Image (tube, rainbow over all chains, first blue to last red; front, side):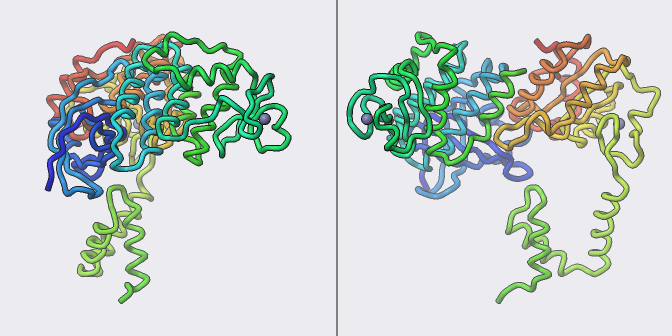
Length: 251
Length: 200
Ligand SMILES: [Zn+2]
Ligand SMILES: [Zn+2]
């Protein structure tokens, strides 16, 4: 039996039984873990809001190493992101990020730099007015941090920089295809030089400065076509929360 | 040894109930097999009876034996206040408090992206119609659960009702986050109803 002490972000919490909850945490020290919180469904539960998705907590849990379910022992809220919860557009952007983490990160793989990135992304949701840019930045940076850095600098085939618009992207191989090589290589989308420049910027930009960059309205759809489909090429399916973002924008 | 097909069928039916996994389903099925035929009949009949007798109230969507339900039909209830809850069960919880004199609207759930439950799966259109009809409704009290799904549903409804001349309030934050309304004690619930606040 071991005791684990770590900071974590709550990814998802579901009712587990009449009285208990099952929560999925992304922890700084031990990666993604699943914990049972005893008696957490009672209104006077000692956990309170600590187990709500988005909460940034300090927690102690215990169990045998490598087992599937741990037992939660203690939780303190470090940050509840209350203002994110009160704005539906922000909330569902946060839920989308959490769903991505839950879907693409495997249990028990610790990566502190990824944890810090996710936490910073949640802070940015709180501050940032332009959620569109944040979503695009999260998608491309998150996929890169997972080890699938897209090749945006030169064409997959001829290794040259594309000189004009009509640049393709091969999602399977994760790289661009120049207009000249496009007829010879499978590419599922194509975009302008302007979009290409923004994609390169998004890829290297530190997310904590997300408010220092603006996406031209005219390029937004093209950029989404690339970064969101990069995500889909790894998840293999649309994320459940994604349509909700679109729906809420129209409200 | 393999289980007889009838047993497997029972287990798979029980597993469809909320909160029942393989182990619990097995335990329940063995309990039922040990009992008398009469006991089994009574259980089976009461399940069928519920389905035959209980309908959803066409006004508030709560469960009832006669449509409209007792509360919707009661002339002593204040028609100017509607309390919006997630589940029919919540109506009974609030009623047991004995404080609220208005009427109800049951949403049949809460918006939950990860479970694929969108606004269109709830009874929101009917709520809009109730509010929009030149009726007596002056206040809509949102009593959804104090968790992410319930909170965001409340925010959504307040946006949805913006165009109408109706006061939209939310039961007080005194209800601890993360809990279920059904576990609230009457005193806490009464306080949170009294301390309700206008939605932004
Ligand atoms: Zn090329
Ligand atoms: Zn009714």
